[in-house]
Image 1: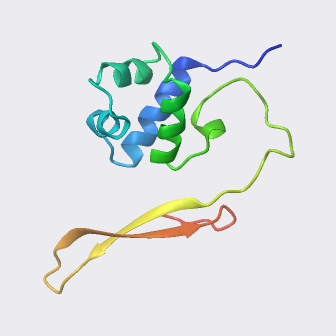
Image 2: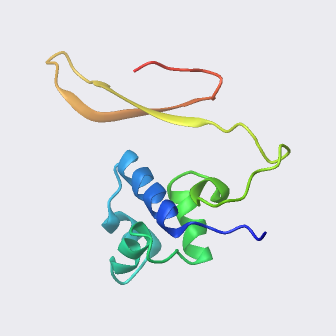
Length: 117
């Protein structure tokens, strides 16, 4: 059987990743230098898939390998399974007036470290 990509699940996955990272459809359009956002909405709705070039750029934008970005029916061989860093953003107050700003520190934790939120 030939492995296939599920367009609908891939679109849902990309939508969830964008939301998690606080990115909008306009951000994706601008990053990929697309003329309009309609293509991006088609990807997110599962009507179509991004071209290979756009998938490659999206994997960079979302900091995720292509194999993890797309959702398909292929099982990874044990030699392909690898641990990768998990990116965590921490927001903290900046001054004594208890105002919270959008100052974020990027920390990398590995999967063997579990955090409770």
